[in-house]
Length: 121
Image (cartoon, rainbow, N blue to C red; front, side):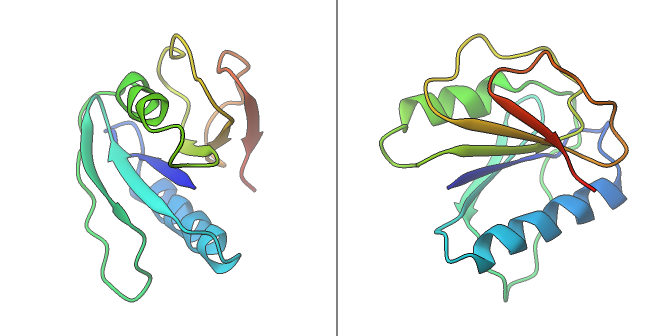
């Protein structure tokens, strides 16, 4: 599973903590999790390693396109994309695989994103 963390400036520290907890829950299901951190660009990609401290990269503007482009180019490597975000960016043009947009508790629910959208609680 490719899990994207929105590390843009509009995402606060409590939302980042919420996102990291979700990543850990996904990992605990036995899934092979690759985490991509992105704001307006991809800032870091690597496997989720629960025993290592996690450093956040980014904190700039927001664009979903870099992660979606990476996912589309590597669609045979991942079963799906889970994008943890506050949802504050324009929708990407085209996602070629399955995507779940998981919006933080603090974000306003939106319907402009392609695929399925849920709100964390």
